[in-house]
Length: 285
Ligand code: GUN
Image 1: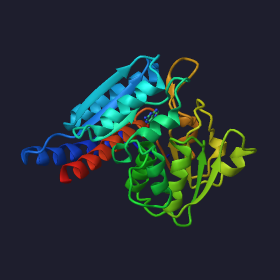
Image 2: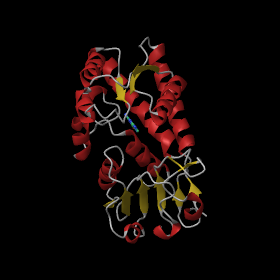
Image 3: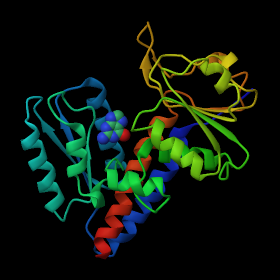
């Protein structure tokens, strides 16, 4: 039987540690770290994610501000909001929740965020630094996945085959880079790949971020593999589930993350960790 990797417990340890580090600065008379989240419209999943981020900030003693903008906000107005936050030296981290409404150019907004406050790690400057292995803000979900792998003793992936399903800018593309930097042999698959399961069956580490409920079945899995499920879906009964058919894969793999309580809480913990890093940099300036 596989071991279940409870990301929520690991995330909770990370938050306790961050809380202690913030307290040390507070007692030394420093201001608190501050994260500003910009939410455009009322996308239900986004509202729920943003709430999770807010709760986590409160738990660690960080200041959190939520700027809610109407669905009809223009791109120019949104860019002005971002520029104001860039100029505000009390703000350490800026996160613009995605997706944005269709009339807004997402890349233009991500470009506008000061790379030094880009705690999502989505600015091309930070993505470029990640690509060359330089020290930078890493996108939160991929960073959280690498942390989970470390916690099960997989720091160095030399000789391991890693397969990624999904090629999003938020997860698939950056996690492939990080796995490569950890010396894995990486294969990327996506919705246009033929015979995906022939490829996934070679995976010692399988990262699934395709957004299809219970898409990956046990015959896709190499015995003993580490399976990381990034999916958050509702099944036909409106039950929360991942991209992996957890119950059937459990008896085949070596390790697996559950949904919920797996990758999701790690994403938030890494957001706080990036915000803390930005804060430390800012208060030392
Ligand atoms: N939407 C879904 N995941 C994310 C994330 O990690 N960051 C932002 N900004 N938006 C998201």
